[in-house]
Image 1 (cartoon, rainbow, N blue to C red):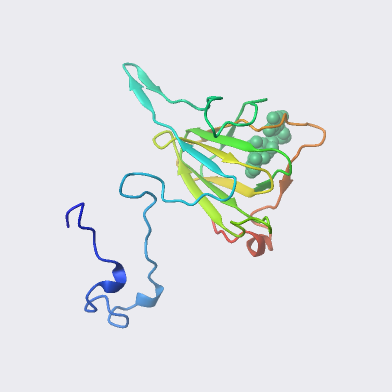
Image 2: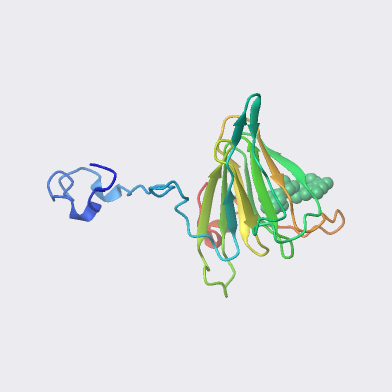
Length: 196
Ligand SMILES: Cc1cn([C@H]2C[C@H](O)[C@@H](COP(=O)(O)OP(=O)(O)O[C@H]3O[C@@H](C)C(=O)[C@@H](O)[C@H]3O)O2)c(=O)[nH]c1=O
């Protein structure tokens, strides 16, 4: 197949070897989907209010530069009031968090992380939608998560992952704007349809 002549959709393939019933376990097979389109753009419809700005790492003679945030970017429309680093050990899951006021702005500096966002806002046009974004220093992006969305992440790499967060509100140590639904709570799957 050439690039300008894509494969026919799966259900128009000749009904020979792939025929249901001719292959053991066919009913259990799940069609894979590409994370990017043919031009390399993310194949993802963002939840209402979520913004993802892919960033291009620029190699130089001694290493690599990647921009994390610039106030002229439309994604950075709220003031930057604090910047902190949060790390996650390999295999560890941090979910589900929800902020009632604050917007999170996440950037994976090192490591391989799967960030998942779930829209539980009943009045949202993207209610019940899930976004998964896999990021690393090879595929960097700024991810903006507005308030009232369930979100969390898993370190799916082999080393400690380092992530920058630039929340839109100062962390209040006495009364943090942070609610948690532990991902392993027996009823968590009733709320967020995601298995890590
Ligand atoms: C954010 C923050 C936390 N802390 C302290 C409080 C706490 O004891 C410890 C860890 O705090 P956090 O768990 O809030 O840190 P953090 O890793 O930022 O938690 C995150 O969790 C994931 C699941 C999310 O949803 C994020 O939005 C965020 O809430 O660090 C500060 O001292 N200053 C800060 O600015």
